[in-house]
Image (cartoon, rainbow, N blue to C red; front, side):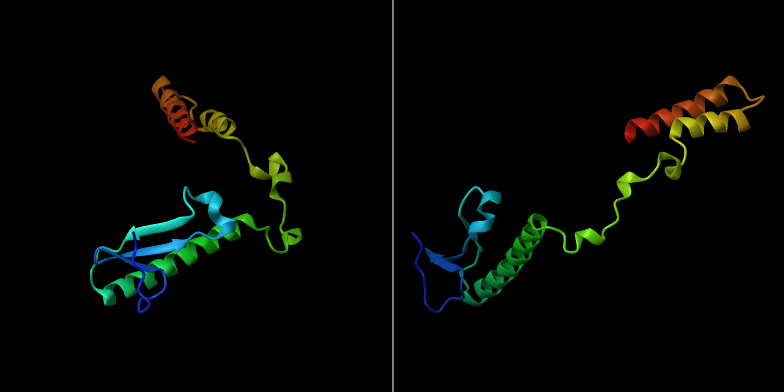
Length: 130
């Protein structure tokens, strides 16, 4: 299938004169892939171009694999991270419906029905999006 050439950069293979990038997926990252190998055509018959593209692909894969490993590892010094989930609701401020009610009470006195409808509609659109 693939003819390996000793003069090629690592992770390169030649098939019918076309260079391919071939790399084994590390065992700790296999669960993220459908196959144990990453292999694709570099779309070139030039060894110089293939070497450059293989180096670039290797760099990108190494960076991606680094981020996958970071995602799986625990946070360093996690005991120093503040837990903001325990904040009081009062510290967060009023809810949108409470703010709308206050706005209509303060600014809506003497205004037409359409003013109230427009403010309520705008808040409902925002709530739907969120």
